[in-house]
Amino acid sequence: MSTDRIPLIKPYVSLDEVQNQFEAIFESGWFTKGRNVAGFREDISAYTGAKYSFTTTSATTALYACLKLLGIGAGDEVIVSDFSFPATANVVEDAGAVPVFADVSLETYNMTAAELRAKISARTKAVIFVDAFGNPSGLDEIKSICAEQDLPLIEDAACAIGSSLDGVKCGNISDLSCFSFHPRKLLNCGEGGAITTNNSEYAEKLEILLNHGARIADGQFDFVESGYNFRMTEIQAAMGIAQLKKLDSIVSSRNEIKAAYDEKLMPLGFIPQKVNKNVITNCQSLVYRVPEGCNRDALVSALAKRNIESTIGTYCLSGLTYYRKKYDAVNPGSEKLQQTTITLPCYDGVDALFVADNVADIINS
Ligand SMILES: *Cc1c(COP(=O)(O)O)cnc(C)c1O
Image 1 (tube, rainbow, N blue to C red):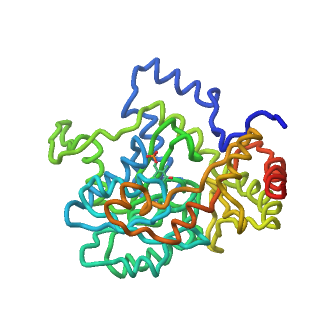
Image 2: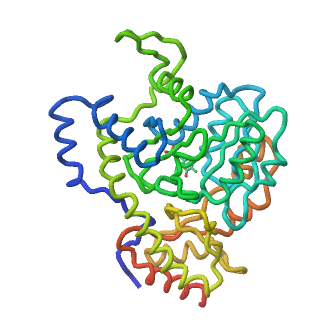
């Protein structure tokens, strides 16, 4: 059977949607720190409800800036969700602190309250909760514990733009939220990221940290910190503005695709990522646990032979070679998810029934 290749995701932005903005940027010669970046920051605040928004080069630099902002370094511990992309832990390691891996729920794939409580120590300086595949289920419990323990809560919302909890958008829930605008996510700026917060002190410091450590007073630069250039360009921001306008419709369309997949795959024994009742997920990645006895890697290969792209869910961070060698504390739940989850294609126009029929055909053969 040969078909056009079915990829995991297709971008939600096309050249004609940004052509005019790109032309204006080239005509003006104004490629950075201009009206597109300013506009995108305002739009992110308006969309999420967060008071302050900053754009960055990636979610990785956004997370790193948050740790620097909190003064986290040698001798400190940061509790991180164990089922995630390596960047979540790498930033902690790179800041000189110790990432303490909290195991996750086999249902929601997110850090559990019990694990968080068990991992808090006198050295804990912050918590990084990951919205696995855009799904903030359980974040409410984690937020209460952080408030009770007076620990700053950083949300790795890299996947979660457009998701919400109790009617509040991700970006307006935690002390600091970090987004990614990598092409694999729903809002694609080529590369890029954002930080949102409601804390004015954090906002003041971020403005400095993200701009070479400079405080601007009376048009003069005063370099008061050792900061960075983590800024996105005008071109990236123009792409972001175009997509944010249609994000809510992208989220509903992805949830319809998920429902079509669920209907076909659940009878085969596939278990979808659980979405709590108070959550709307953006379905950034459509992830299932494969049926008992099904070899996930063999399924991914068999789908590839049929020109259908699929991949693992994501990584058990405590089990990555670097972290396993250094800390030797692999979490069982997250390890099981790394071995048994699969991501299936999800984008506007994907033929979910065709993909699901192929999955069924492979499983039953
Ligand atoms: C994609 C992703 C990142 C990294 O995002 P970049 O923008 O590529 O730096 C970090 N954390 C999670 C959970 C991600 O999915």
